Length: 95
Image 1: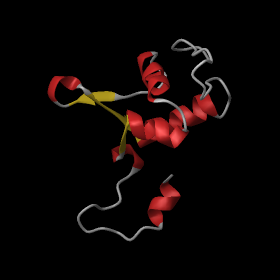
Image 2: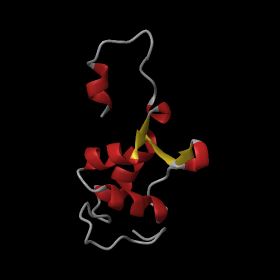
Image 3: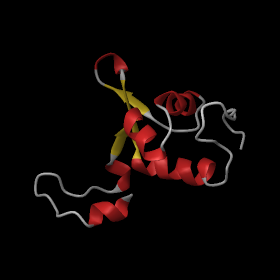
């Protein structure tokens, strides 16, 4: 993900930020992983994908890029979590 950003020209208004300061919405994560927003919400609700809420009434959910990368390494690459909705989602702590 970060290799593409390095090829872009540096913006004076929006400098490149470290992955710990880059955030994605649930919809963006679903696009990146090629899955549904429902499944991303399920991972968040199970505690598998760290996220935080902000905004009025805490309705906006954001996922740090660093947390998404850790989630991919810990759960998707090893096959403990499927990108398909009909696959079972392990409870928090199970892998």
